[in-house]
Amino acid sequence: MPLAPHLPDVIRKVIKVMYAIVEILGQQFKVEAGKRLYIHRMEEAERGSQVEFDKVLLLDNEGAVTVGAPVVEGAKIICEVLSHVRGEKVIIFHKKRRKGYRKRNGHRQNFTELFIKEIIVA
Image (cartoon, rainbow, N blue to C red; front, side, top):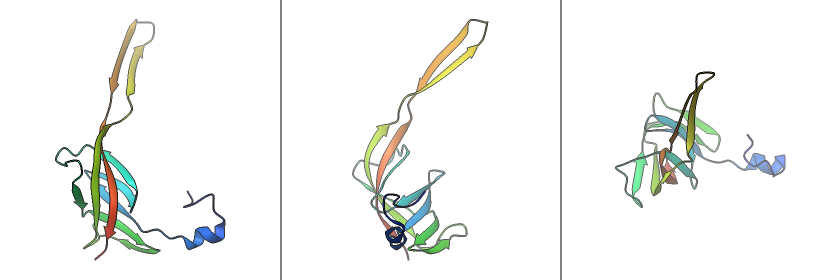
């Protein structure tokens, strides 16, 4: 997916964004400074507090890619906890045809909304 599909190719080649692949609670996310990120609920994180993640697996600093083995040394992500939210309801419906068996269940996942403040490279 292009970075800015509405811009001409000449301008799109000039824009270079720093991003990182980071592991948070066993899942990998692509993060950029100034973006919001929804992760599984962090119970220990208070609303408005700062959180640091140091398991940075890959770092792209304006085209210079650094791959960790297994992590990039000295790199970390600084985030601010914005809120604890719940996701959309997911309906689970089981049915066995011709048997009269129907079971309906629902689930809402808990998420923590993070704001990526900065990516620090050592």
